[in-house]
Structure formats: C-alpha cells, structure tokens
Length: 107
Image (cartoon, rainbow, N blue to C red; front, side, top):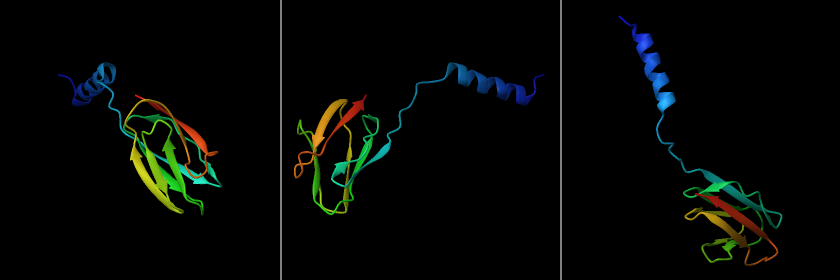
C-alpha cells in the first residue's frame, strides 16, 4: 500500500510536468509625468491597466498619435485606461508637444 504522502507527491509532480495553459493576469502600471516629461514606460500587454499620473503643476495630456486614446490630466491628477490592442503607439502631450513617448504593447 502506498503512503498518502507518496500519492500526493506523485500528483504534484504530474501537475508540474503536464501543466496546463498559462493564464495571463492583467497588470497595473503607473506612468508618472514630472518635470515636464513622461516617466519610464514599462513593458505592456493587452489587458494591462495604465494609470497616467500628472505630478506637475501644469496641465498635460497623454495623446496617441493614432488617436486611439487621449487622456487629459489637470495638475496633480491621475486617470486610468486599459490597453486594448497590441503594437507600438507613439504618444505626446497636446499642451507640450516636445513631451513624447511610445507604448510597446505585446499580445
């Protein structure tokens, strides 16, 4: 007769070897605007949530050049959006066009 420990160990091992499909979990990311520039843009995946946070005393925006999003950010405010499509999207601030960045979204 096998011990319950051996049976449990065999089942755990089988689960690790056979495995199942990986389940993707959406992540939350902050992109902080400070000192008239966008902060670091993290690696992104479809379904992730970006919180744009304006720490400046000036109004800013996060505006996609392809018009897929346009986030208006008064001073000291934040707004969130869900990433809906894979690909690269260039963005800028409508009020300060020299402020730019790129989202690189993986499936």
